[in-house]
Length: 331
Image (cartoon, rainbow, N blue to C red; front, side, top):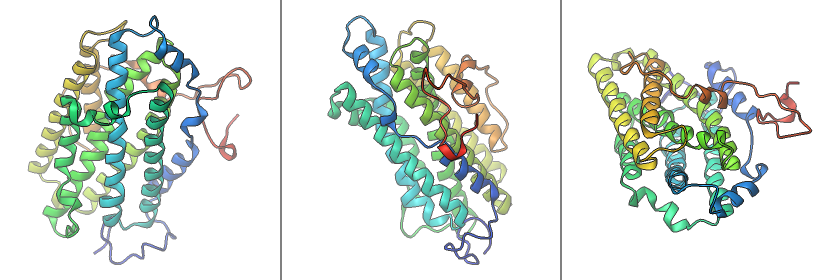
């Protein structure tokens, strides 16, 4: 068997020569984005959180719902990488990226520990919201049920049906969890940052979003490569199933958006978040060669600034938000 998964012809310990240069590029981009949460000051956020005049009850709810979802979602994703994907993706340069991604998921998990500790939140409340808040519970359960088979120690990608199951896992975590379920939350927290509220958490969400954009790119490249190497799996029926899964994910994310932001806030509301989820879902469908479903416009064009634009700031006046390690800085 040859190819990117369960390749018995390749020594997974021998990374050179490389076959999939896109995996190497994603790894290098991840390293260039290196950051840790402690680099970002939370002092102003603590002042905002303790003040009775800065944040409304609606904004506090939105922050709590997002911390409640992301605090456990990052661990779900990390577990999938380490316990399921790494065993079956035998290509060494892809494994190198998976190790990098697993590290980044650990950084993201640490970010929410840092945020909760800084704000003095009730940890039992935050870290059980995946069980106590129905819209968060529904999102997590949806992804987990997509991937149960792959976690079975006896699972193998041998045969078209099992390869489809593996691709379904990849779509569940990369396209749905990281590519759709994360993005309404990103928009919510960055909308607050645009109002100069909870700036520290907003910056950390920007960094997380940049990491996730690379995770998503790697995941889609991995999915598309498996499709290209195993064309028999990409049947009309499987394509229809994947499209339906993404439509179900959109419904769950829209329900979460209405739950986290039921009455709207200054300049933003749940209807806009719902439209944004549809816009994002169309982009994800197109990325894995499926036709878009919604045709919705992007209600938050400013969201692209978090990942697409190089932000040039006066180094002596403020932080450089386009973070790169010293060896790769561009001036």
